[in-house]
Length: 252
Image (tube, rainbow, N blue to C red; front, side, top):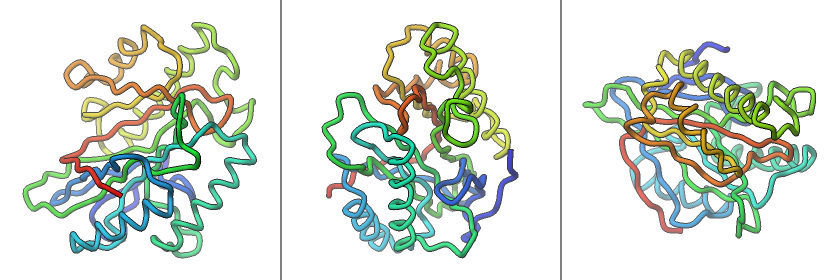
C-alpha cells in the first residue's frame, strides 16, 4: 500500500492510485467534506460545468474537488472501459489539470445500476473539501474497490465467474480487506466509516452480517446496499466507504 501524499492545497492527504483516480483521501484538521448530489445523474460534461458554477458560487476553485461518483448504463468490456477512462481523463484535464506524471488525487466510484435508465456515463455526486475551523479532520472518502488485483483480466479477478457461496465470500472478503488496508494507510480505522456502500446485484442475505465483522459502525449507521455492478464485465462486487459532514442536492 502506498503512503499518503499531501495535496497541493494542504487540505487533505491522499493515496496515489494512478492517473485516473486515487485510492482514497482524508482531510486535515480545519477542513470537512460535503457531498453534492445531483437530483438526477447528469452527463459528464453537464455535471462538471454545473460543479464548476457551484464551486465559484462558494468562492472555491477546482482544488476543492475531492471525489466523483459515476454511474454507467451497463458494465463495459475491457476495451470499452479503457476508452471511457481516456475520455474521463481528457475531461478532467480541462477542469482539474495535473502536471505530467502527477497521480490523480481525486477518488472515484463507477458502477452500473441494475435496470439503469441511463443512456451515457453520468455523475451521481461529487465530494468537495471545505474549510471549517471547528472541524477536527475526521472526514474521508475512498474510491470503490472491486474484486480485482491489478490489471483487468481473469487471472487477476478473485473467484472469476464463481458465483458459488465460497466464490461470493472470497469476493466480499477481498474488497473488505482492501478497504480496511486503505483506511489504515490513511491513519484511520474501519470503525471511522459512517457510510459503507456496497454495490452488488445479488441479494445475499448474509452480506450485512459479514461486513459488520469488518466495519463495526454498520451496526449503528447501517449498510448502504445499491443494486449495481462494478463498471467492467465479470466483476460482481464493489465496496466503498466515507465520512461526510454534510450533504446538499444540486439541480442541473
